[in-house]
Amino acid sequence: MPASTPASTPARSRTTATARPPARSSGTSSGGSSGASAGRGGVAARTWRRLAVWAHVLSSVGWMTCALALFALLVPALRGGAPWAVEAAHHLDTQLLAPLANTSAATGLVLSLGTAWGLAVHRWVLTKLLITLVQLYLGIFVLSEALDTAADTLRVSPALVVGTAPMAGAIAVQAWLSVAKPGGRTRWGTRGGRSVTLPTAPPWVFALVVAAPVVDVTLGLLLGFPSPLCSLAAVVVAAVVRHRALRRARRGSAPA
Image 1 (cartoon, rainbow, N blue to C red):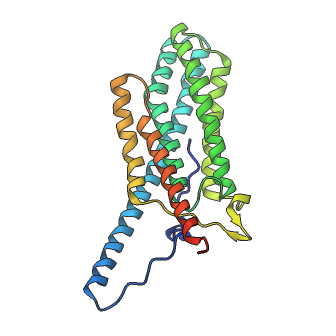
Image 2 (image 1 turned 45 degrees about the vertical axis):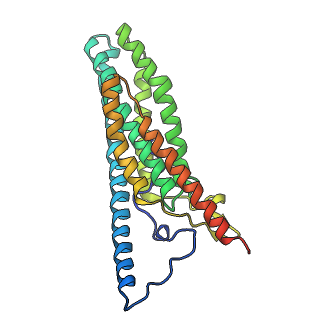
């Protein structure tokens, strides 16, 4: 899906919902070492977050490309003169489109859960999330099953051919949403007339979602079918980390 994901993190995402870190003391060796550690931590966080954004953009473009390739393969198959195209489309769906779609959705969700953008704070992110969920449902339970049937019978229905075009179009719409970021904040993006600021996840959360697709693809090759177990686990971990960070923030802001 291309998931609800930003191309960059807003400046305020670098400040968590917890209290601001204490100022470093000057002129002491401990202050210097803590400052160096904080600097290295900030570089690591930015590096892994950018890698996650890169993986999300790359997989989203690949997902759209595969959807267009499916359309190009299924059109001649619909005319009944290219049975090889049906088998090629089925192979493309299971071996390339499905892993790219899973990667796009997982990285998008983790980037939303791990940064100040959130899942439901901004309208454009929420819209991308809803589009992604619909795409995943239709792709897994409708398109893939239809391609399985077509591969067995070597017959393609017009609905299957038509269905691949909206998939590519939906990804293009999500790309525009990521660039334009229309709509402002949702009602969950403000509290008491003030903008909600969400905490940023630690670097290892973004590292996890970058590594997960590699493991998933390896498992898929061994099992013979797409297996997004690690990507799903990365999303769950990011959600748990976000929940705990918000709970600590609420406890810290509660009156004594």
